[in-house]
Length: 378
Image 1 (cartoon, rainbow, N blue to C red):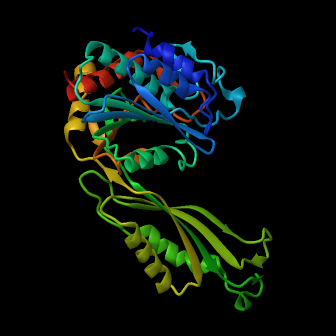
Image 2 (image 1 turned 90 degrees about the vertical axis):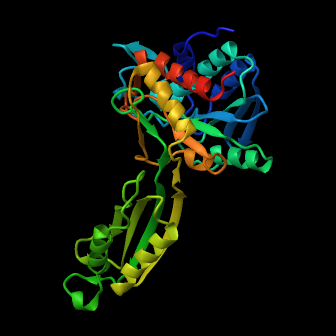
C-alpha cells in the first residue's frame, strides 16, 4: 500500500503541537498507518505520557526503531521565520519544530518499514517501533516504562536503532554506539554569616570551598577507553550570599555534573569527591542524582549493517561515537544487547528555525530500509 512520501508524513507530524509531554495524536497516526502493513499495536499510558509499542512478527531476531513524538518548546514565536507548527519548505529545507529532532526520523522509520514489508512480506524475524512522548521531559514515564513492561512479559529485543539526530556534517557521518553516564551533585558548604568588616568573626564558605573546587576541577578521573573520552567534571551553578555587599554568606551551594565513561562507576566518583572535600576540612552536605548509566554497543552486526546501508546509500564512511548527552538508548540497552542511534544532521536541534534538508529525507528512509534488508532478509 502506498501511503506517500516521507515528506508528507513528517509534515503531518510537525503540524501536531506535541510539546512535551503531549503527543497530539502523532502515535495514533503512526499506529493506523502501520496496521495496514500487518503491525499490531498497543498504547502504554503512564500519567500524562502516552507510549506506543507496535510489532510485526513474533519470532527472533526483533529489530526495533525507537523515537519520541514530543518536542521542546518553541521559544519566542516572533523570532521564528515561520510558524514552528506549520511545516514550511524554504531554500531546500523543511522548517518546523521537530523537523530534525526527531519527527523526520520517525517518518523515515515508518515509510521504510512499509516499503520493506511490501517487498519482503515473508521476511525473517520481527520489526517493532517503540515511540514515546516523554523524551524531552523528565523521561520517567516514557521509554523506561515500556522497557519495564516488555521485560516483565519476557519480550526481548535483539537490535534497536534510536532515531536521534546524530549526523554532523553529512547524513550518515556519525552513528552513536553508546552514551556517557550522567551523575549530578548538589554540595552545600556550611560557613558562618557575618559582617565583611569583621572577617575574624565569620567563616566564608566561598573561600573555604575554593581550594577543594580547584582540586576537583583539575582531577583526572579516568583515561577513557576505546569508545569513551575521559570522564569530565563541571560546575553548573554557584549560589551564596544575601545580595548585600557587606555580608559574608553563611553557606554556599554548588551544582556540578559528571559525564562519565564506562570505565568509571558512580560509587567510585562519589567516594573520590568525598575524600577531596574531607581533606579540606569542610563542613558540608552532598546530595547525588544519577541521571543515567552509560551504555555501549561494541562493533557488531547492527553497527556493521547500518554502516553498510549508509555507505550503499550515500557513499559516506560512518564513524562510531559516544559523544553528546544522554538518550533513551540508556533504557533500551537494559533489554537489548545492540543499541545504536542514527538520524539526520543535528545542527539546528532545539533552536529557533529548526530545519532539515529536504534532500536528506529519502536517503534517511532508504538507509533504514537497507538496514532491514541486511538484518531481516527473506
